[in-house]
Amino acid sequence: MSDVSAALGVRLYPDLVEPGGLAPALAQTATAHQLDVGQVTAPEQGRSRFTCAELTSKRGVVCVSLGAQARYFMIDLRVDGEVEARGDATDLLQVAQVADAWRAGTTLADLTARFPFMEQMKRHPVTQAG
Image (cartoon, rainbow, N blue to C red):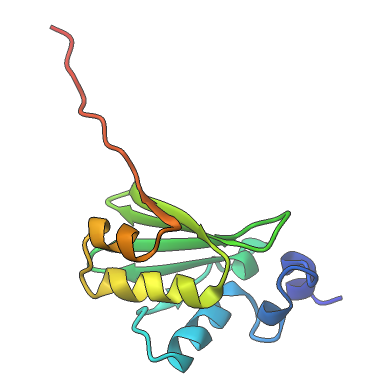
């Protein structure tokens, strides 16, 4: 069994094995559907090089990782290190569509309305003790 097969779990993610993991499969999906997800990168070492992907844009980073017990893609939209929205998609095309919409300037409200599996994270103001 190859490193990529062992890392991904062929039973859950057979479609990610041939391209070499999540990042290349996500890039291929975006290209096939003419979506602009920008540059897709993955960690260089360890199991996560097959199971994680990052799509960086001027607006922030879309971080994607794989579910371990069931097939789903965990998505975090991060701005300045803070998670602004997150969700779980069941299809790689949905992940590419979220990243494309985010890069295109879609607001968080519109993004979560368009992709009901995404949820805007609640912000709590920091209060100072006086």
